[in-house]
Amino acid sequence: MSKIKKALIPAAGFGTRFLPQTKAMPKEMMPLVDKPIIQRVVEELVDAGIETIVIVTGLYKRAIEDHFDNQYELEDKLAKAGKLEELETVKKISDMAEFIYIRQKGPQGNATPILNAKQIMDNDPFLVFWGDDFIDAEPSRAKQLIEAYEKYNSPILGALRAKSDEDYKKYGFAGGEVVEPGVIKVSKVVEKPKTRENSPSDLAVVSGFLATPDIFEHLEAAEPNLKEGEELVYLMGLQGMIDQGKPVHAIEIKNAVYRDTGNKLEYLKTVVEYGLKHPEFGEDFKEYLKKLS
Image 1 (tube, rainbow, N blue to C red):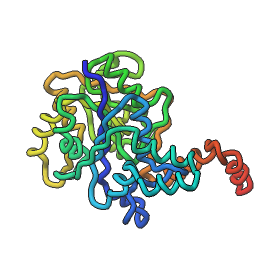
Image 2: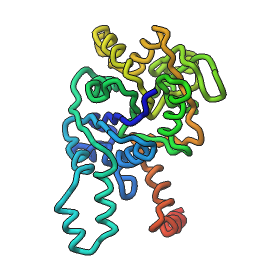
Image 3: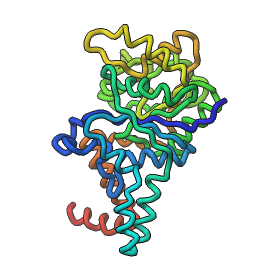
């Protein structure tokens, strides 16, 4: 069984929900106090043993590449100013992993960046994490997905229980045979079923999954059959695998808090919570918020 050493982060979306802020700044670079959202995602991947991270970008996304690149002028300025702690922080960012960048091309849909990375992923399994949301969990969702892959030797969908009727309009859902508490062998996946009645379960597949290389052939088979206006989504590839009798599992991420930082209100909540936990000024920030109330 191949070790998981590669990950893909799709980051080509326009971030229209945050306009005009995202007119020139990628939504993935929105700050969580003192680091961008996508860095939080990368840190989780690296902590789980990922060595190569492919980021699929689009127009106006150069800031992401710049962030994870060496900035010699900045490093030199920090060194000369004696700001060694800040220098070490900046240098660590570019040294976290091998970063590869691809420009997205193809039909609309979250499966297109996966197909764009086919040649780089080769025959290796890989994690797919979005650049504008994440899950706080212990162990991390990356480690939980990898552990499940090593146990079941199949693609692994990360899932959370639906909390409201609105969730059925926003996420894909997986249903199937329960093989142990919090784990199902998937027999059906439905993209945005809209209602509880149309959904195969209450397990919403959100914020990343672990893919095996056979997903590519099924996505390529699905693309020519798209209806007018239909997007190419990764669940089509997984359903194709299931229809061929290949195992796919979904796990409920344990001890999880979903951070939908592509949503304005949820983004603000996350910033506040991270601010309260910040070692430098968390307590002062707490006192400030008390005064506001």
